[in-house]
Length: 133
Image (cartoon, rainbow, N blue to C red):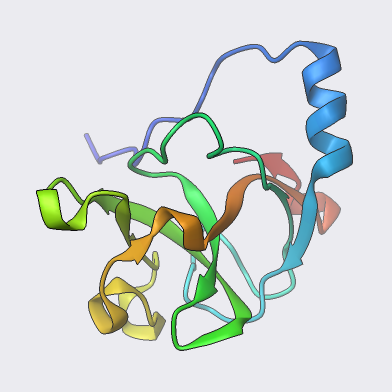
């Protein structure tokens, strides 16, 4: 049986919390092919900037982060590994789903959790690809 990839979150979110998250959400547009086949250029995403205020990132989370080499640029990547080494605590390794076309932690190393803008939780456009992530 093929690997299904990272598990999806299945908890039911109360309506009030869903509304608060929607109001504070940031919108981003995918511009390149580094996350194919899961995300395509032109996909529009909702990002929860409060996702990591109280809880750490988890393996498999889709995240938006500031590019370590160009901080005014945002990147969409997947958390590939959490740094557990004492000297690297509070850092994550982020990876693109399409390695040949992705510039990620293999190029720039682990990034601090503080560089994460938030967790991607929904693709809302185009309508045919709208889904929770």
